[in-house]
Length: 128
Image 1 (cartoon, helix red, strand yellow):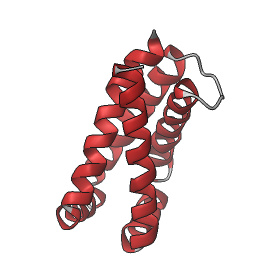
Image 2 (cartoon, rainbow, N blue to C red):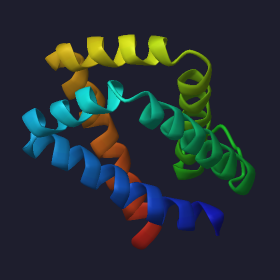
Image 3 (cartoon, one colour):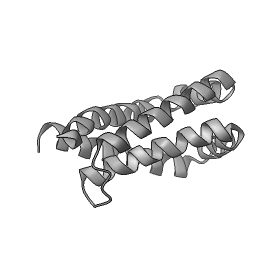
Image 4 (cartoon, rainbow, N blue to C red):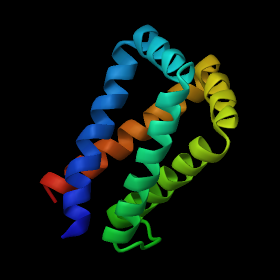
């Protein structure tokens, strides 16, 4: 039950964000650069990512397997880790993000994987 609900939320959100980035890369690179220059946004995002990660980890089965449940568990832990990094060492997060935005290959691979995960979770959430 929780896996289906989380897949219905995370899947379309992830797919929409990645498609938007692919369709408007210049715009979203500017958004990311603007985000990284605002310390209060960085802090707020870290706080929210940590909370969302904990909610996903606690509400999901926290199972490490090759399935939608495992993928959602991975996203929960990733969100928690991202939140902790943003809160504890925001400069490190900004440094890594800038490198990623400069590397077209790394950015496109990351976005492609996120798109596949978003489509898969959408399928699981709404059709499986």
